[in-house]
Image: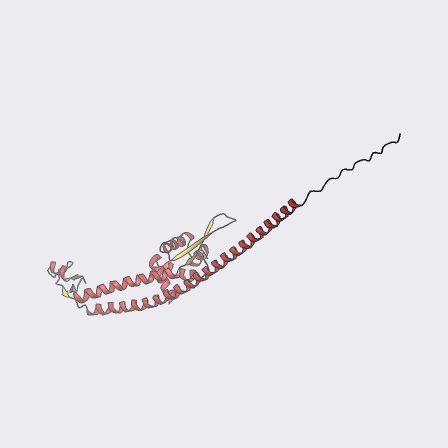
Length: 240
């Protein structure tokens, strides 16, 4: 069911050729754009145009890597599941609002139709044209809205059911992302703590060495200098 909604989101933005992107990009890793083009049997420019359209809505993300040998950049793509689901959710809600507006209009207003041309006018426009068809001039007849109202209600209920599934998927995907985020925060905190601990140990070692060096200098300063003894020659007096 999830892939069905993801494919609907892709098709709404970039048309039918984008539908197969879901099977290629619904992965934890980013996929090489040349591999995508090959799988879709499209040129790299056609593939990029599709991906850029979807990227403008935030439904796919990319990273780029430089080819060390050739020197150019290659893009790698991945579908953003949560944003795609939110896009479909908003689209379903708009369609439901539209159906609700139409149902209310059909239930409260009268509409007239030409049986020959199938031209439909609301009561106000039908009155302005003397209840005659603008195309053939035949008289308009009042339309029975019951069948159309029932059809719109069925469509509305179908969309409501789909919306329920989408909301469940949005909740589930949000929880997954929250867990990943908490895990990343925990990892980042651990790395920060390890860096601080290592830095404190390094600083303590430096202070210890400095203290040791300072003690050596102090000890050397307090040691008395060696006295220099000069040997004096003994002169004996000659007896006269």
